[in-house]
Length: 247
Image 1 (cartoon, rainbow, N blue to C red):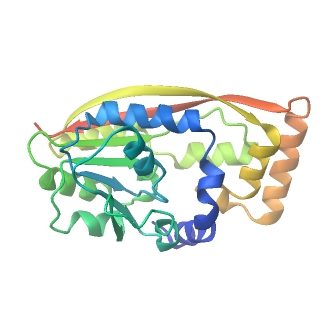
Image 2 (tube, helix red, strand yellow):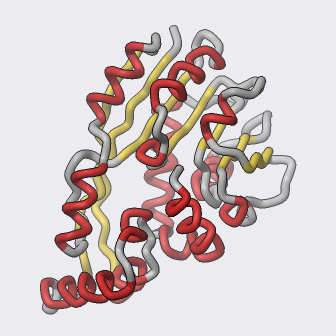
């Protein structure tokens, strides 16, 4: 992860859940999908790699009991402060590449919307393949190459330039030995415009950290003009679920 992104997450760590918590229904929907595609069982040992504040780890434990603590890994100590100090979690402040180089026992791994921050993806994938036992599953969740978020035009343009394509990631996972399947999951958001604009103002996506205050203000003005007649913003959130299994 770049120094700029690290600073971004350190800065918003204490308010991250407020920025990203669209709704309880959304979190439940995503968590149910994660449990399904990970084929998560009570006896599994799960790694939430790039867990942030542990939004999904916490939500998983609301839906099911696990015999082993969830290993919550993130390079931002500020984000990890939001993970409960509990025997249900093992907290590790380390980046993904360093984590997979360590001797740890686990059989399920979740990486959600983090892969674009990792430069050496092949090293990460090959290390995970070596670490996982036969029957282990790595679930990689990312956004598609284009999105329909109500953002300003320059933000959308930057996103499309920088977002990795899921087919390239799937090919790389197959190259290192995984059996791969691709699925698409969609959720329709309905969110008050004022709330969403506040999220953008606080740079809720790391993408927005690339814009200075003046550029962000200009972007918000563009959005205000575009959505002037709307008090509620409705837009689809589409995710690519890449399930990589070690057979």
